[in-house]
Image (cartoon, rainbow, N blue to C red; front, side, top):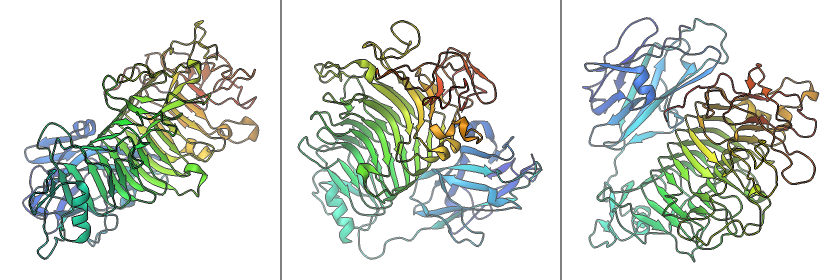
Amino acid sequence: MLIGLGGIATAGGAVAGTGAFTSVEAQRSFSVSTAGDAGAYFAIEAANSPNGDKYVSKNGDTITVTLDKVNPKARTRFEDLLTVTNQGAQPVNFYVTDTGTNSDLATFEVNGASVEGSTDGTRLDSPQEMIPGESRTIDLVIDTTGKTSKDLSILSSVTFHATAADLPSGNAQVGPLLVDGTGSTATTFATIADALDAVRSGSAAADTIEVQDGLTGLGPVTVDVPDVTIRRDGSGSSRPEVKSSSASSTDPFTIIADDVTVDGFEVRNPGGSAGISLGQGVSRISVLNNRIAEVGADTGLSTNALGIAVGKGASDVIIEGNTIGGDPSTDFGITGGDFPKGIFAGTNPGGNTPRPISGLLVRNNSIKNVNIGSDTSREFPAVYGLQAQGNVSTIRFSGNTVNINADVDEPAEDPSFDKDDGKTDANEFAQGVSLGSKNGAPTDVDILDNELNVTSDTDSGGSDGSGNYEDDGEDTLPGFGVVVEGSTNVDSVRTTRINRNNLTGKGGVINQVDEAVDPSSGAEPVVLDATNNWWGDTSGPDTFNLGDIDGDGTSEGPVVDNDPVEDPDGAVADGSGAYVGDRASGTNDDDGVVQVDFSPFATSKFSI
């Protein structure tokens, strides 16, 4: 397919001015240039990533991007191709314009959001302001789903724009404000709240608050000032700690304003339900490089402990580089309630009026040490890495490591804490990524390049070796990698892509959407795309009988028998790897065919 894509050529390092990027004029190539009054201090380089390594090459001062294959009638995403850096001394606004016969099929993105503007230099989408020294990673998305031609020209030129951002006027302080714990000078502050007060009142015009490493006693903090970044200053080895006391009902960080970044903190909330919470309706929020190590641990929490909670109505949220749950050997983790979660995004909590969530990028996080509360009364308590419920659109879950276990019930700080207080282990389960509920399920979801090590203590498959996970008082359910559920959430199945993941937990991938698999409707089955994953074995995935979990004489599914089953294209799930299955409600789908497309599958583990 000739798409006008091979050979982006740019000059590495700082550029000399407008048009200073070189270009290669060749078949299937387009040229790149810079424009704007800050272009002389704007650098473009190959991204430090697998895609940067694979598609980007450097020859002298020239960087060339060659995209050798784009599938026709498909949406192809090239993440982390290029990195742009503001090497000047003042903030710049950055965006991209492109021209070509079908340039509307190509979109340049940063963190899942378009950074494209119009060819007359007018910024179309949300601004990408970059402070001095700041870098952004550029992705490229090619969407040819509506095109039938196999010989399609898309781009002829691309321009990276960098224009000087407006600077504060008057005598107000400019530049990062420093929280040093004392506030002993006119330019330092004792607390984060004091610095926010200064920005709110106008006595300081800075948009960045730096917090000295090693400080403690900083929480709770409510961020109600828009357009502000709060970050550690990096002066030491210990993160500044934002912690709510055991008696506090306020989360360590509560963000209720737009355009806020929280970066680099130790976050603890032993008496509350969330580490970092995003209020209803907030937009353009970034939660970066934080360590959330203790939530709900002191109290025998009756509500669900959440590492990061995304409120309904939120949009354009980035959760990247965080460690959620801390170290299981030293930290209590995310512990409490019947359904604790590393990250939760829900549009209809508590049965209130729902508000859609749009744009959720969850990338390069570590989620572990998530534990059920000691006083749970649920028959089926569960732990989750990421759970998204309701009308959540455009989720990118990539590069994450989820390491949770359904039987992690003895946190190191309290050996007496024991989930097994007369209830069977069989009723505990874990899910790495859970999409949907009776209130609806997310759409347009990419689950890519993740390590989903979601297990139970008896993932070998039952006390009798049969592979059945039955409520016999001895066995837990397997750890499920990804589950899509809800009775009528067909669009969620249709628009979810689960690719290039390592599925270590035996539960694998499960499609629990009834309407997507009911052959009696006469409709073409809607199939969940779980191709090109590592299922834990070179032989590929297996299938299994979940059995009669609750002892009512009826199998709860997902699969009604132990016989090998096929995917819709005829591939047989008869390997030794993780399970693949779909819901079998009554006689809904007792056809031996799983509505999960798992072939082709990887025969070796991905490097993530």
